[in-house]
Length: 275
Ligand SMILES: [Zn+2]
Image (cartoon, rainbow, N blue to C red; front, side, top):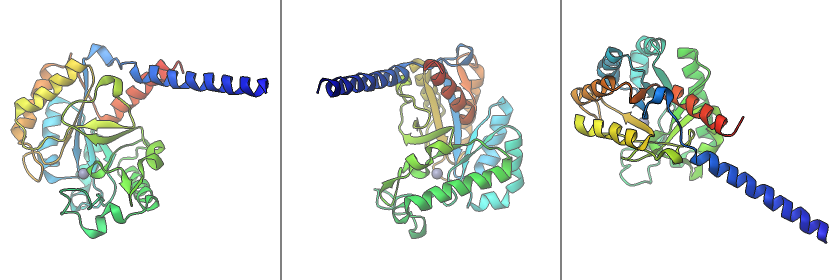
């Protein structure tokens, strides 16, 4: 009887240790390279013309690397294939955003979701297959083997069941939540990061988000759609002013592709775990 009691006790203590160790890691604040106060990820979703026309020249002007979460079925991929390949060669990231960009039509404000791209009609297996095929397609474009993912519409369920758990191991980093505030540094989890998707915001509002991230010592993650065109847009001028601000404060902001930031965060976490 005692033996069993001891076994239960020691198992309990071990388990507590695991939980405790997990908490220590989660609360260990990330220290950004070269004393930067914040890491900044500039991401552009859905493969839109205005991104190639306006965002890319602005990024290149300041030497920043962006992350482009392309919808591979977009006609803009087919029509401007060589340009997408060229920006990848310049060091910009092509990220996985699925092939068809399925979203749950049952959620509020989703009247625009077509029946064939309704994530509620998908199975988990179908969504996993689509995301894996998108990785293969992206590899054919840029030759890369490591990838990050942004969930279409921020939806986490296919056919009402979680699909993120099934694809987590395929990615270095995942953007899966939306919010207008940067994610607190002690809540950062590279496979579950929060983004802000500005729409119609002023340059000052875009800059204030970076300042907020610096104050919090955390990751400031922007997810743009249209830049000076297309939908959910910010003006090319506001976008340009944000980049000019970040370039003028390079000592405070580490601006890089999300895959580079993700690799760094994963490395920091391993260090904290003593691996
Ligand atoms: Zn999208």
